[in-house]
Image (cartoon, rainbow, N blue to C red; front, side, top):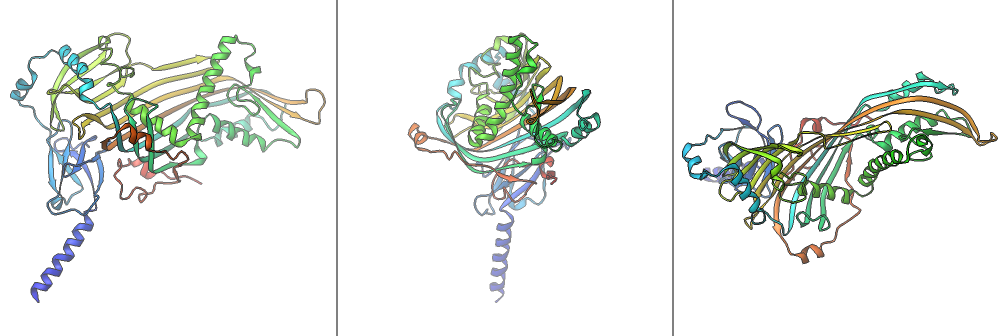
Length: 507
């Protein structure tokens, strides 16, 4: 009887243990500085795993019931690898020890190469080291968008419309949201040939969009919000025409505003505004294609492609390189090399090159000057920020493929020009012009977008496999008015930061 009870207890304990080990959530900290450790790889039994976020947090779901012998493996740049038995994990904090480099390791691996020789060998080995054939990759993608109105002024110069006085205009500005954020998340398989935009197909498994509909900030939403407020004050049989080159009820851009400027300036300004609006239309019109292109751009904007803007290898003569240190990444002993412009180049940063095969396994980069500017007819644009991290690991065919990408971009848009509002009525003779408001407007909007991508699995496929897969073009994300911790339960994703967890729409 005692043996029977012992067997039952053991059985119950095993069930509890298995249930408790369906997932693992923890935070990685430096054992000395106590600071969070981002971009660490956490895997179960050396198989595909997840990446810790910028605060060191991660959550790993297990596909099947774990065993007492199962372990997780943790690897990160500059830290000792760590293996932990799942049964011994009792704390949500995991400490990693910094890895020191022994002098003999440097002497054996260095082989007295100059930094110029290392860069040259790295460039020569691109074709051999990286995967350029057809693959099927399972990935998770998150896009976080933030916008802020830094300035919003409308000063009345003249008005014959009693309702449209300075007090009314100020009340309109108060209604327009000063900031907004939204988050798009996608779990998908992508089929295609790396680097070829025309050979990409996306199979979305699950997707969500977290945003507050009342706070959307864009060219079109500004027009819609402004016009909606104005319509509340329209008399029967009247309508309003807005002339600014930014807002517009009858036309996207009212050509009458540009009559005093040269054709060349007018064409350039219209083309710029049209391009911005088309980007928004493309984003809203076809979710699958827009996000497929976004994922492709992240993967393609890499040093391994000749036409990449991250061109420190292709146009290495524009950069200075310096060996800064040696370190370990995923058991690779690497050179840590800094790069910075010596001529007309855009980026600076650090590259980590495997000392054995001269493959770049990680790059951290940021721009050193604005990447694009526009300033004409009161319209200004400054693409002032682009920084990121790319991490590569070997796949089953011993080729390096992108494992993780974190790219942040920032820009500012400004408009400083006259604004006219003209009231018309169809029952009035002549041009039907009744009243007019004349003012000056000054808006500055700052936008930041952060894209994250983690690739869990890579599988080589044939061109026939690619051709046979058929996309589902009408797939749409599930709208979430607030963060739902249950939405991605059971799926390995990038652990959300606190801003996402705290997000909630205000109805």
